[in-house]
Image (cartoon, rainbow, N blue to C red):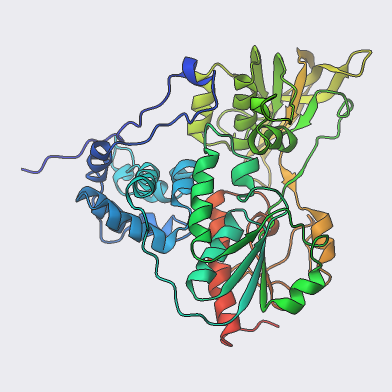
Length: 470
């Protein structure tokens, strides 16, 4: 008689909370070969494979898991690389619980959890890096076309890799001194080690993609030059302009945007100051405003920098917060406190202009708003003070208007994002395509990658004469 697989996911080893808050090393340690095989056996290999429909890049999930089950990890890696150019990244930071794993049939069985697809993807990618010296990649014969990709984040890297595989000459232009976009400036080392991103970037460069760092378009190279020299352009510049609440006290010393704080810590290694020469304020009593993944990243980074107390202030409740459940639970394990139904209305400073606290107001939830979540409503006469010597606002981002202003002829929506065809990525400007956060607003890494993959497909169709929206 067949033995029913374990209804629960195979646990992934992790650093203990009291140890990990003292370092920036990766929290989750990954599966062993034995653990990966055990978890792969939970997959039912159902013929409808609904999990694939939940993946923005359409990975053959049953296919690669089947190879893991048989111990053919090299074949599993080859299947992954057919669809995903950044599997080690996606296996770590993608919200599988609301994408592929949400569709998993095993997870629909009462009392069962879905197959740990993300953990298996991470295992396969890491196994390949450790055991395969020269991964085999099929690249089509040269098609002769030249393509410029602006931005080396998830969307740009994916588009560049797919176009290179198709046989095109690809140049990527990156303003910063490191490739990866949000993968390097936004996501902390303990969630996504920079060495992993560098490894994935090197793979993409091995496809003959040329990445030009420290090269801001509009300054180092004009848009006119790009339009003249390249047959197609893909804009994957993300949406990295920080938002602020714009309440009284925002300009006090010690009030940061999450973008600045995390960029200093992640990309410029401020947590290793003075070994690296980019300092960052190390607060003792830190308040983080927001309830998304960026808020979790900022709070957990502040804790590792030595904060005695970190509080996350969120205007809704735990049920409405958009952060990944795993990241929230890790934060709770690490001792971060959460203040629900709370909204800052003013920051308080001392005589030297340094922040010393936040005046807050209690909230209650009303009817759902346009986001589908219940709208927070202030409660009268409920003001109180939260002490803080550092406040980090993690309330979202906006588009980079400077760069977009350089591309004359682009159409933008009321929020300043590029208007592009949702399927092809084609913009109103001839031969210019766009995808990722600069089109949709802040979204997930894998959604940006999906946009890059779709745009690459349609750029190929455009250059071959099969598609022309202009």
